Length: 322
Image 1 (cartoon, helix red, strand yellow):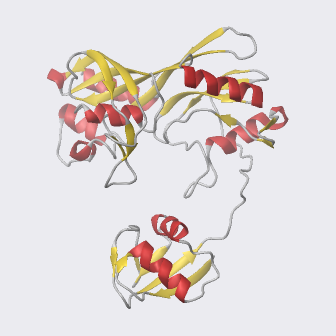
Image 2 (tube, rainbow, N blue to C red):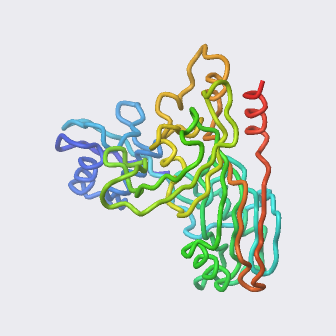
Image 3 (cartoon, rainbow, N blue to C red):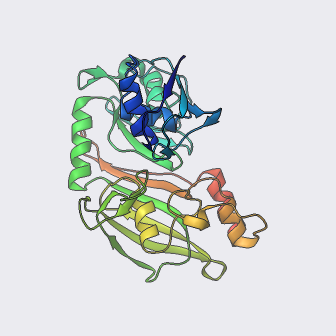
C-alpha cells in the first residue's frame, strides 16, 4: 500500500478539491475524481487522523489529506472455495440459493469473496467462454443482504436465452418480504419509473423523469399484531435496481430492516419491545427471493424452483406470530 499526502488549494467538495490537488501536485497515482470517490468511501482518506468517508463533505483550503492507496488487484475474478447451495445444475445452467450477506459481483470494497468467485471455483472446467472469457453468466442479481434463488448461465447460448426471457417476461420471480404496516388494498400493483435519487446518489427512487419503467404486483399474505407489520408476496414484472425496496417504500410500507429505504424505522431503537423491537433489531432487509420460473433454453421445458425462508427470517416470523 502506498501513501500520498495532498494539500488543498481551494475550498469545495472533498472529492473535487482533492482531484484538483492531485493534478497540481503532479501525482502519478491515477487519482481521478472517480478513483478518489472510491478511496474516500473505502475509508482510505484521512485528515488529522480522522477517516473521511463522505465525498461530498466540505473541505477547506490548506487542509492536508493523507491517502492510503491499496495495491492493484487482479482485474479478472479468481476462483475461491466458497460453499454454494445448488438446487439444480446441468451443462447449461445452475440454480442456487444465495445466502444473505453474499455479494454477487466483485466491485469496489468487495474484490473477492463474492458469488462470482464461488462460481468460478464450483464450475471449473465446465464453464465455456461467455463473451470470450471463462466466467459465469450473471443474468440477474440479488442485493447483498437479500437471500434466495438465482439462475446462472454457463455458456453464451444459455446466457442470451435467459436474458431474452427477462426482457419478454417469460422468466418470473416471486419474493416475500416483511414490511412495515399493512398495504391497502391487500393486493394490487405498484407502477412507477425507477431512477437514481436526486439528492442521495446511493439510493434509487420513483422518479418522474429519466427513470426506467417498473411494475411490482403485491399480495398481503399475513398481518401481524394489529397491522404493525405484514408478510407480503411481490411478483416482479420488471427487474430494476432495488425495485421491491423502492416500490414498497414509495407506498409507505418499506421492507423491515432496510437501512436505505425504511427511514427511522430502519434504525435500531433502544428499549423498543414487541413487534417494533423485533423488526428494528433485524440486521438486514427482510426480503427473500422464494420462487423462480423459466423455460430451459435447451430442452424447452418450464422449470420452477422454490426456496424456504432462511433461518433468520423463519425465526422473525415465528416471533412475530407470538
